[in-house]
Image (cartoon, rainbow, N blue to C red; front, side, top):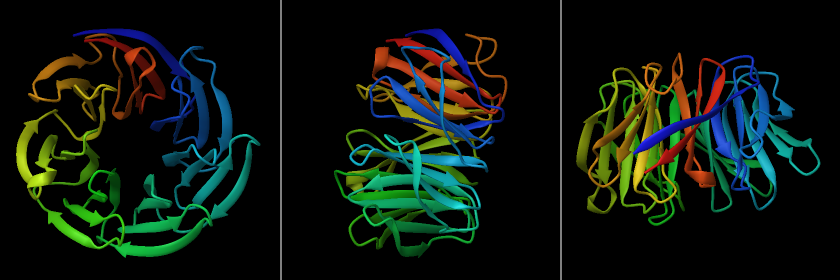
Amino acid sequence: MNIRKIDTFSGHRDSVYTIISDGTGHGFYSSGGDGFVIQWDQRKPDLGKLVARAGVSVYALAFDKENQMLWIGQNFEGIQLLHLSGGTIQNTARITTSAIFDIQLFNGKALVALGDGVIAIMDIDSFALQKHIKVSDKSIRSISVNPSTSEFASGDSSHRVHIFDAEDFKLKKTIQSHTNSVFSVQYSPDGRLLFTMGRDASVKIWDVNNNYEPVKDLAAHMYAVNNLSFSPDGKYFATCSMDKSVKLWDASTFQLKKIIDRSRLAGHGTSVNKLLWTSYENQLISCSDDRMISVWEVLA
C-alpha cells in the first residue's frame, strides 16, 4: 500500500471536528470550532466555499441528498437546516442546550446524539421532534445505522454501546466492554460487523449476526481513537486518533497496513478528529485540531 499526500486545505480558524460527503462524489463539507461550514471540491484544492456561519462550534453535520438540505448541529443552540440551492437557513430547532455530537439520517428520521445522554428522534419532513431516548447520564458521542438489520448503535461516555431497533426505537442490547468513553461506532459496509472505539485507544469488532459476539480487539493507537472510515470497496478501513496519527488496516484480516503521522508523510501535528474515505481517486480526507484538512491518495 502506497500513500501520497495530495494537498492540505486551510480555511478554518479553529479545530476542524467533522467532514461529510456533499453527495457529488468529489466534494465534502467541513465544520468545527469556528462555526464555519465550508464546502470543498477535491478537483479544485483549497478553494473552499463558506455556506454557513453557525455562530457556535459544530461537531455534527448530516446531508439530506433527497431534499438538498444540510443539517447543522450547533452546540448548545440546536439544529439549523440549510437549504443548499437557496443558501438560506430554512428552519431552526432548539432541541437541546447541550452539545450535539452526531446526526444520522435514516428512513425519514434524524437520529441526534446529545451531550445530555439523550438520543433525539426528529421527523425529517416536518422537522419536528418526535421522541427522546434517555440512554446515559453522560454524552452520547456517536450513532451508526445498519440498514441490513434495521438497527442503529450508539456509543457513550459511560463506556457503553447500545443497539436499538430502528423502526420502534426499542433497546435490543447493551455492550459494556470498553474501559472508557466510546467516541465512535461504525457498521461495516456489508452490515455484518460493528466497530467501536474510544478513549481506551482500542478498536473492538463485533459480529452483528451472532448476537454481537466479539470478533477482535485491536490495540489500535497510543491514545483515544476518534473515528473510523471504510474504503469505497470495503477492503480497508482507516482509524484516526488523539495520538496525531491515521492508520490503515485490512478489513478482512484486521492487519495494520500503513501509518500516516508527522514523521511519515507529513501528517497532522495534533489530534486527528474525523476521516472520510471518498470514491474520488480513492482519496482519504482527514481533519484535525491543527485547523487543517489533509487529502491523501491511497494506492492499494
